[in-house]
Image 1 (cartoon, one colour):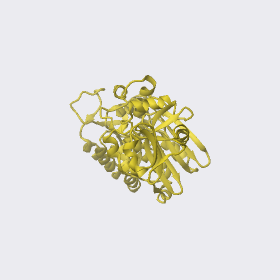
Image 2 (image 1 turned 180 degrees about the vertical axis):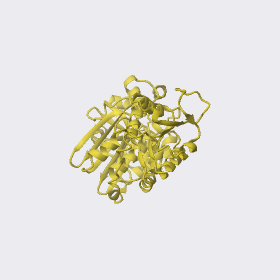
Image 3 (image 1 turned 90 degrees about the vertical axis):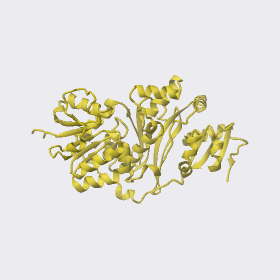
Image 4 (image 1 turned 90 degrees about the horizontal axis):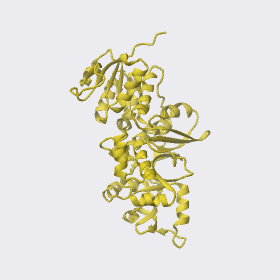
Length: 406
């Protein structure tokens, strides 16, 4: 049986778009590509023989094009494109995690209403097919927790800082040179990229659609040289970790730099690699690791979505139970900071270690409220896992009693 010809338009020909095109050529499917929409039509493109255009509306109005691959950086433009394509009943693949995180609930409704398809594995966890894993492998098991390293750029930077002893600025430059980081790296180092991915995964794992501004994300840009030295002196590393915990009809979400020791599975996940650990009722804990940044790893996942459009469709089976879940920000977490005294008014408990360094207990909602204070004063916020908290209490207790604040 002959495979039907896909009349496909690729919108965006940057890093990921070129990675996707690489796999089309490798699999002799490049002739299925009708148009490539680019922002600047005057720029020289390779290969030159492709049909380049800067008229996205021409593509969307072409009834012969049934498949849209959306791979642009601008989330607002991406939203308009994907929304219109789904309203026309098209098959759509996207990797724009910010756009999806803000509009997923609406786009899923449009997919169902107009009979299109919407796949976006390339928006999360790089080369790890984690949405497929959640939807299929955990179809008959309840997920209790997810955590992981979801941003390859920040992980690459932290690896260079810890392993090579170079500065944050030099490591960021290297990440940009390697194609892992954009010129404007705010989304990566500020924890926004990891947040968007966490929210997309939470929609599948827990059936809960939550807007990004409702969830705590703090990045790695405020981590200081003294934080690095403190971690190294205590045989620790710092990783940017995204966490989701479901308990008693509550869902707790956050993205934070985190201390991990050598017993932690995240300790040896280095460079541009991502990892996702899932804990479920029956299976227990399983960890998935793969490259999280770069042209070919992400392009490969987009190509897989493209290849499976006729046979694959996401099923949001947890949405009904997700409506019963309450997104909780009143939960306490333990944090370390190089300037802990600047946030002591919001701490339930505090323990000073040396000068302004210390750790304390704080509500997630208070960190959300005080993000501007944190960033203006370059206050490092590094959360403690349970094992590290126990170690800190043992090693850094004064007179065997934590200082308590009302």
